[in-house]
Amino acid sequence: MNLVWQRFTLSYLPLKAYLATSYLHRLVGLLHSWRQSSFFIQSGDIIATALLSLVYALAPFVSSSLVGVLLVACVGFWLLLTLSDEPAPAYAPLFTPIHLLVFLYWGIAAIATALSPVKKAALSDFLTLTLYLLLFALCARVLRSPRLRSWIITLYLHVSLIVSIYGLRQWFFGATALATWVDPESPLSKTTRVYSYLGNPNLLAGYLVPAVVLSFVAVFVWQSWIKKALALTMVIVNSACLVLTFSRGGWIGLLVAILTVMALLVYWWSVQMPPFWRTWSLPIILGGLLGILVLAVIFVEPVRLRVFSIFADRQDSSNNFRRNVWEAVFEMIRDRPIIGIGPGHSAFNKVYPLYQHPRYTALSAYSIFLEVAVETGFVGLACFLWLIIVTFNSALLQLRRLRQSRNVEGFWLIGAFATLLGMLAHGTVDTIWFRPEVNTLWWFMVALIASYWTPLNQNQSPEQNSPDPQPAAN
Image 1 (cartoon, rainbow, N blue to C red):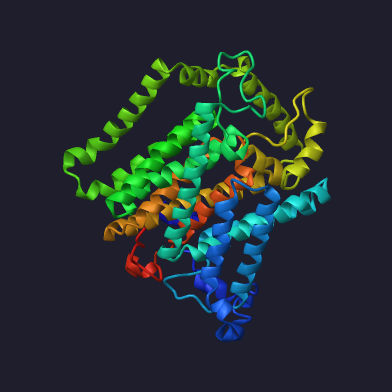
Image 2: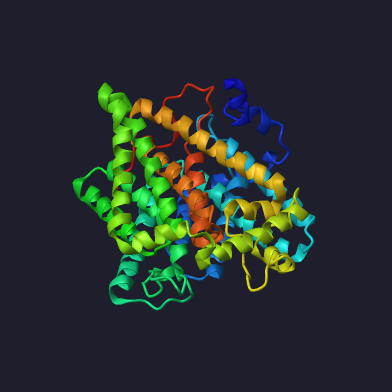
């Protein structure tokens, strides 16, 4: 059974043999001779980091079109780096099982586009999907360096702090709702839901889930007490802003992410714990967190009303809206179950009106998994789930390796794992995941996990996994 699992999760995938016979991989290094004489390309990882920094620094503040231009620049530079690359050492491969499944999902999306009933609309968003997937490839390359990894994470955390501070300002001074985000008949209809620079409280919540988790693990990664205090401030401010979005999906995502990060931290420290705490620390921590949640539900009326509305079924307008959209989406999946209608909201908007219930227009399926099934069918959904499983399995394997040497870089891996699980939990009932502000973060987290990957059949020490094994000072 263990062997079957290892094969399913590609844990022992012979990438070296696979790449040696891959015609596509032979393009790598095609311009290698030019690299030797080009100062521009020799500084490629630094330039790539600058481009990625622009994406993650500007995403909350600028239009999707400008983010798209930055993604095109990132993809173009990734292509230039790849064509001029030199062979990667065995302990730091540029291609991992996660890359393989990302490429497989891209191939399925390409087939879905070719067979789409609305090919022109699907092609437009297929190109957008390609940009995101190649952003993952560039991130996975850059993040192999602990210094560059630390720089980009730190940059995102500072940007998210600015976003959260502005969100808190809206709570204290008021903000005009840009859409009907609460049932008008609800007692919370007049409650301010902060949205900061992102224009939508659900989108802001999705953007802040990674910020809360990464700032929490930064408390353990950053070395000086001043930096630890800054990280703790980020945790408090980001968490408060996320809670004040009153996004039920965001709350679910935050709860799942926090429970996950706590469980992984207990696993990380378990080898140093006395037997009692090794057994009972996790139940005590989880029980305490759930107790705080119960007290909040009991004594904080806005929280109580929003939590209870989750279980109100069609009595809540938001729930009723999603139910009607999902019923139409199920019919769309039933009619094209194998390969879907093609990727993206443009194809969805062309086909959905043929199935929608009267007065329930929608831009998406309001669920990541349903959206993937609509766009690429059960074939694409199976590949997407396989990608998630392989990513999580890879994270756990590398976390075990890093734990053996007590390498603090493992805390970022814990943060990435918990963030992905939280984003999936939020995305189960919403599709803000497909917006640039959140989608770029999703692929950043997947790339962060991929950047730690080391073949299991090799015996290098954890420090050999990256060009600079020492954690960068923050």
